[in-house]
Length: 193
Length: 194
Image (cartoon, rainbow over all chains, first blue to last red):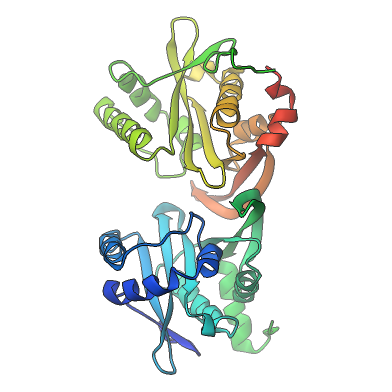
């Protein structure tokens, strides 16, 4: 069996509210990054407030959350989660955020995506994984397509910032599609994107 | 055209009203025992609710309306006798971008497929666009809810998202479809002419 938590560039680790609060305090100041990842208005909050929120969040067991650490140097670069809204439907919503800009566009996020998707299908036994993104987030779109997600729709003008209307995209990956991809990778038929 | 004088909560055969904590729990409890209805309305596992449980839900709804300011809930009443026949709501309103999710259901079987839902949707859209000034609304439903698909299409909704095989019931899989309607599209349609 493949390692559940170790990829080729990153590993998934537990979330530590005090460490995450410190990083969020820093990452939150990067409004461009926040706006790429968030659907709600971005805000600045105190370390105390963030920590309280994160601790309270731990009580909610419908989400599976991980820190993303680099294999080289153990740098804490972001976080990712699966939120299971309805267990009866076997569906979870995926979220991922890489706060450290030095690690953008170099495959770290995609590597973390592969791990959390594998966790969703192989440990949570999900049937499908969904995610949403702003259509202007091209880096994310490229990464999600690489992992196997397909665009399932476009919500017209649903995001308004700086007076400009943007579309949001919804993407989905079915368990059988993902299994098929693993098969191709193992037999060497993979068409590397 | 709708104007400031046009009643917001009155249509030809239906009107919008508030929750009545005395009489409505009994009626809605009856609806929850009708799985055909609840499986059209809910994506979550359905279960029959006692009047006391419904009453508790109503309290949560009114608390959220009060505190979150992103939920607008109406009961649908037949105009003769003010009889409760359904519910209509706008939820998860995103004020910064002007989007809200709408849901509508006629719980009383003899009032289904007779145009009551259509009148109620007309009221709900006018409220969303004419009172809340939303930019757009979204409606999400399983693809087997053909009545709803037809109703939303009639009002000019456009299919925007199709989450493949996201619905799983009775051992079968269906897509979950989401429809969007822009305020500007609604304003140009016959439905906004009053």
